[in-house]
Image 1 (spheres, rainbow, N blue to C red):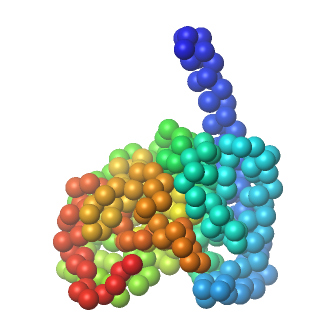
Image 2: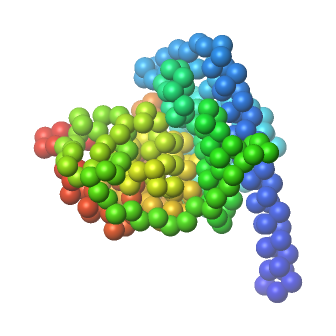
Length: 301
């Protein structure tokens, strides 16, 4: 390929990236506004698996589909949406490999927190390129905090989508863990694992996006995580910018692409991870695992 063609391709991709980022911003900002509006109205119900679903989830899902409809009409884009009853159809390697761009969206992550007006829920939008984390973000409407990656760098924004916003670039972080450090965890951690409380403190924030975004800016030394692709797609490129990765608890294998072997592939949630992962720096992984021993005789799959 000639230098001229390389430059043209680079320019085209750069323009495309800006368009995608603008779409991500619009979905998060408008989705956040919808969430706050529905919060004032109230109203929620339970899904078949007894998890909470609200009118806001469904409204934001419709918003996302409207924003992406032109892209989804092409052969290059695919959407995995938590609120899509047909999202199991996307669990197909040949289909995924044929799509350069895969969007994974959770209209409201932390719906129980949302239903109880606890400000740790977020709108999560992730964009994978060639099945690897590329762009995405999480917006917390009640606190107006935004975490996002533009495809190259990641940022933490306070007072997001306002004239008073304060933006800081997210850079690699590798905390020394002390007894005063905070380790974030998914629900049910104490059912499957022991916890050494003298090591550091544990917190259950009730939302996956909190567990994954907060450590990227030093609000916690890591987390224990097991959820669905849409729960971490938006924050995936963000926490990687902070030098953090999701590592399989048993083997330490890093989740660095959309590897279908790492997900259940069946049942109500084929996109649920098969095993628990630790979000941490490479150095801290073994330290955390040492103080988080698995309970014997408990099935963790």
